[in-house]
Image (cartoon, rainbow, N blue to C red; front, side, top):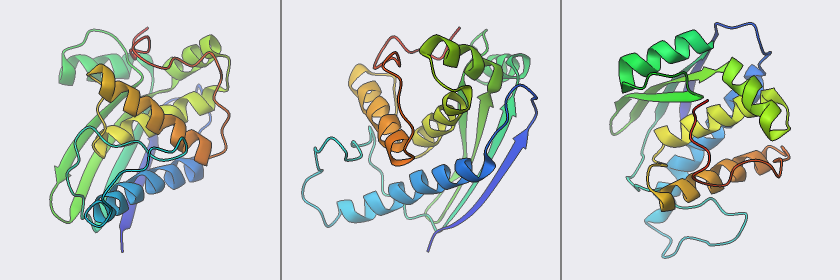
Length: 187
């Protein structure tokens, strides 16, 4: 049985957050990562159905018993500083994920999500800023469970996985939402 410790530290005032929904979403993503790798040893082929979770870029078996994740909801200034300090990128970004511990039975990580960035992006894409911020939580959690978006194919898999979880949460995806390389997490 997988146990979770999820902590959300809201350091901004721009956008209300739904902690219950965020925790449900993170649990769903990590639970799927553990069950997917458990089932992969028994299942000969990955389903290609439209509603199926796409394969991860790197499949490494996750046998976690405990997941501990903290999510910091920050402003542009904090996001910018974290991005400079840890990734060497001199701009604020949407989400940064940090795997802190990943061993046979335990995973610890941190997400830093940028609320003002979500407000700006949501206006551009024509949807609710709270959904955009939730998308950042999904995106960061997917990174932590093995998805990558650096190569074009991997980026497509990441976008499909994001849409998979948004659909599971019954969140309508706007038609203006980028599908591929035009979405870079930069202003």
